[in-house]
Length: 275
Image 1: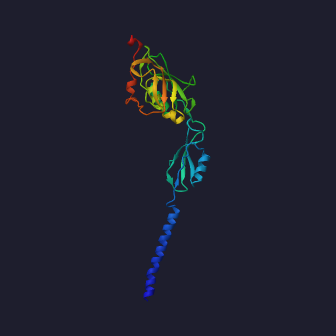
Image 2 (image 1 turned 135 degrees about the horizontal axis):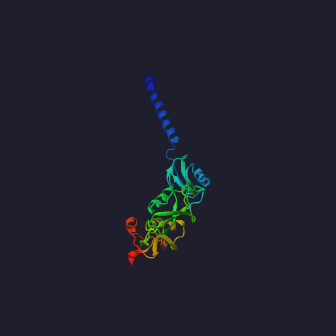
Image 3 (image 1 turned 45 degrees about the vertical axis):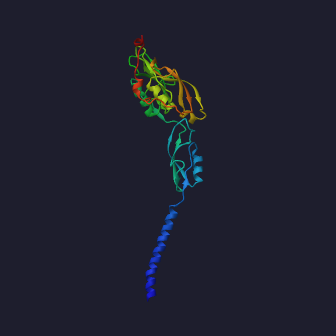
């Protein structure tokens, strides 16, 4: 009698234990608990190369977007999620962004009659670049009086490849306005372009990029010298050029703390004021 009662109590407990253990074991197997794959760096790979690299780790690639840049091979991976080095479960999809084979076509905006700052802002938003700032006599200083592409006027709404460079023809005033020479030492290429645009000047000759062996070196390099040298008391004509020397050794090279303050680049003098 006691034995039957003991079995009747113990049997349900054993069944419950087996079910719990079986469920726990199935869950660990299903979720691959303790199993992780390190995500490889796919940057620069073609989609086929990325799929092969991921396939060897029981992962797969899923293209979610494309962009266009001249800095990477066409059709190569330019971004990924999760990032390289992270650990994920086998079977995980790695989302990738590819560099398009051809840039997207967009409508050229109407820049004429905008201020220089407004025009540059519009170009930046839609993905076009500023090739050069040209100046011609016009009462409205730094107002856009023409927009050029490859040396010819380009009308608003004309189709153009994203990433192309536009020349802005701006008014220089009636009295030969002149601007201060900005101090460019310590700036990167991207910062240099920003300052020259704000100062109504152009980049002249890149004389040297010391220690620049790769594209990455050139991107990260900073200005170590310029001609003419930066001097807020000296003035040069609107649209003048400044030659620069870059270096990949950026130790100790820092720009002025107020380098991105537009106010210091706004003051203009005319030739009449200097006489």
